[in-house]
Image 1 (cartoon, rainbow, N blue to C red):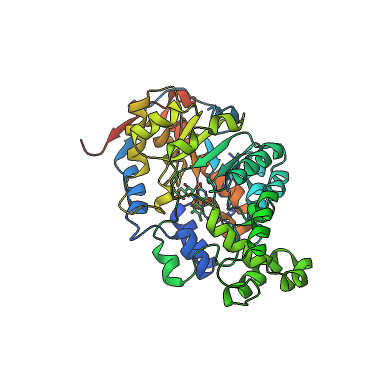
Image 2: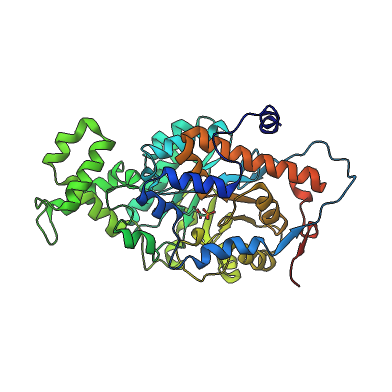
Length: 415
Ligand code: FNR
């Protein structure tokens, strides 16, 4: 393939193909805040580590002389046709890495014809990101707000933009214990990153106006260090409106409103009972780790689940995502749609996840590292590398298509 041919001709890619080298180089290219936010996990990072260790418990057993010259990686997941069983995971506040991050990621994803799940806490309004996707399909990820009208507004906008599915993330009803961000004093959103979906929303504007009209606590004109930082962040995002921002208490009220309503710590199955009736889009629930939760999700009438521990960013000492996948698939049988993320770094990882029952995988941190090193083209290269390795692995193991990646291509390293 093209990546190999370039290598044979002695051309060096601008983004390393090895995931550890990719991460190391990207970490050097990022600010301390971005490094902590993107690379950090919850607590001591045990969950993040076990996500990787779980892959080490499985080994692929290649078969010889199988006569496989061409592989078909394509698949359809929750009604979306995919070139390969890979989508980009939703990532919020990626504006910490570079401005207009979501549009850049979308541009890279579209160049690699790969679906992208837009984050509810994106760095660009979803309408802009959708334009950058062109004809390549995208999904929308939602955090369930305490304001039900905001939930409907976000779903309505995602539908209007052309999203092909809705992913509701369940595992972040509160932000996890992010030690790296806490120790730097730089939790995300502190400077207004990741709130573009909200500040571009009509329902959200009403909520901000209510807060300004009936301020709680401090009067809105008090200038705090946080307010100045927010103003500076907003002025970078909207240069023409800098003076307006200076005269207005809106930015601060926006951030405060966002922090109050972006998620719902009391979220329960009851809240989701109305979900199926709120949209005609396919729905997936993200963050499932227990087989009983998987069953319950499917009882709600959703179209699929995403087995994920949020890249180890929420609960430390949590079960590895790949281990949870095995138990979930055993509980719900072969039919329901199951995606997996948390720990996917290479095409060989995708192969193992598929063999253990995933229909497709979401790629998280690696695409952000590509973004940090080479912008949209870095995102494209990272995607192409993962897909190329998956293709090669299939060819060398002897499977012509995804349906042939069954559990018997693997052995456990320990009984
Ligand atoms: C995330 N993740 C995430 N998930 C989600 O549903 N909405 C979001 O806004 C975010 N934001 C976010 C930001 C950053 C910087 C990271 C690294 C992750 C979780 C993401 O979708 C996915 O579950 C993990 O990234 C998978 O873990 P790995 O493979 O990146 O380790």
